[in-house]
Length: 201
Image 1 (tube, one colour):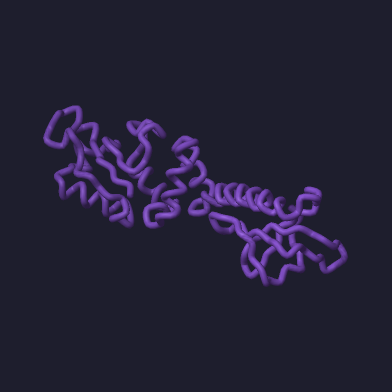
Image 2 (tube, one colour):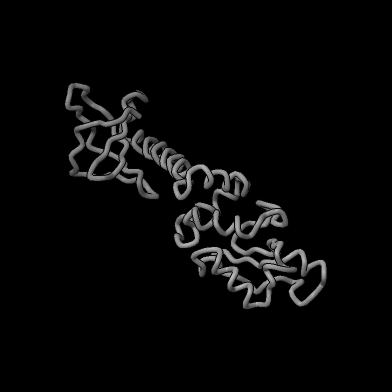
């Protein structure tokens, strides 16, 4: 998913055979930075000498406009990506791409620094809230006379759903139509036990 070319300032300034950097390195192939160092040594890099100071010469799989890669340390980049979990999780990688469409790489890096592999929690909650709003709008077509306060979120057989309260006497009685919003689309589920509200919408 994410590959980089690593260059060294020493070889770049010397215009030697490593001036154009390493071969493309698929970061998902490596479990730690030491493995990448070994790969660079096999390509002739002198990491204790002229090639001690490394930089990112090219990158694939991350939007180029999200960061100035000349100032990002390759080891720091790799270890951040590794900690985030996106190198071996396609769903997280897609969320990462979507995040960078509207945010900078620095902001994403700060999320990983603060929350580690849970960096995406707030983003997922935001997306879930959007789905809840869509589910509520769907239900309004069945219950046009109800007030906003009559719409609630309930949990039904492990689904988060929007429902409407018809009777506030405990246990709450909700309408026949409910709209789950854990999935990408909303639709009515019938025949489920829907008596207990756990959160006001």
